[in-house]
Length: 218
Image (cartoon, rainbow, N blue to C red):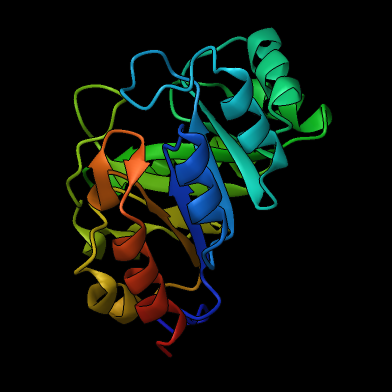
């Protein structure tokens, strides 16, 4: 496949922040999206943040992405307004109808799909008219993420129209593999546990070095 997305222009999303100072440090890097998890089962759950955390998220100048799992429309919209979210990333069994309703409320939608074989891309077809991006992640037993990479050669089986972000097991040493990845709809990467000191706290030095590799690679 012809490679349309150069790594200098790829969307970089850093997900799973909570601590105000860490949020501000990541915001200063060359990233595009910052993700905040509103799923209580996650160790990176934002929860009922204190005033300082709330303000750090709201004041962030990058695109705000709220991550939800099987939440109701009302609860998602309450959080979206409170934290001034731009994107809603849906990681559960959310229906195309819910995606459309949220879009009508003015939010951009990222729908996550766990991948273990090429047949899993069939599930994306019903969402092609109601999502701005898909996110392809490693299939695991729960919604917390596995920290493992799925077989990227499976991406050859995706021939949809919606551009996708890649997640699952991305770590500081994977930038060369990312540079070799060729797919016309590959548009971004989602960084999380592979760059952490502890849950919800990212290693700024590792992130900065990795992003420099990405942004200076053709």
